[in-house]
Length: 221
Image (cartoon, rainbow, N blue to C red; front, top):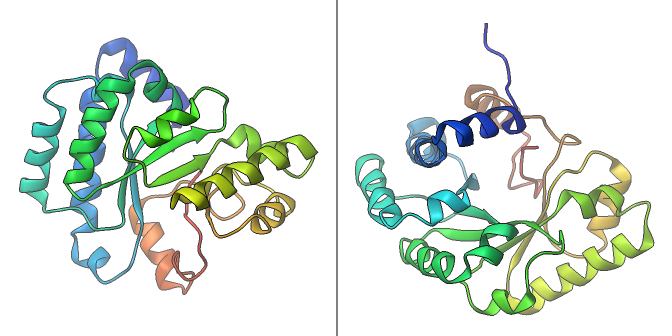
């Protein structure tokens, strides 16, 4: 019987076993395989996949990504790779080189967990970013803490000035969604909209008329 195992459980195990780079490449390959499947090609879907700091620091990352693209097909224009604030802060030069190579492949770059208080704003001008993802710690308090709302609103305004797209992650309450809606155009994701699900269930959800693009939402946790 299949059951959902959250990243908070399996990622520490993968780190302990030294399997994080393999997991990252497996996920990237799965994304390309799924988005090039006939059932997905007929739909407009935004795809995202994470890369850990460990993977980004490996010299052979770009050749391995290119090999996966050669096997499964080029990624869709809506494909993005997400990296955390921490990775950019600790390995800015290495990360910048890797992300520029990824952008040259036609893949977008998103900073995950942005607003957690780690990234220097100067990094936004040094690496090729296409999206900022508001950290869930801000989103969690945006409808209860005026300062959290002000910080989130400032980040959204900054992203707009820089021509970056925005995603708010971890939305669980309608009041959070309403506060964020007032800040400007953005994608939203969280359990308020959908929990993690198998690909077959996700495609069925789209067939049911709840288009991700039409509702300007990103399904996920």
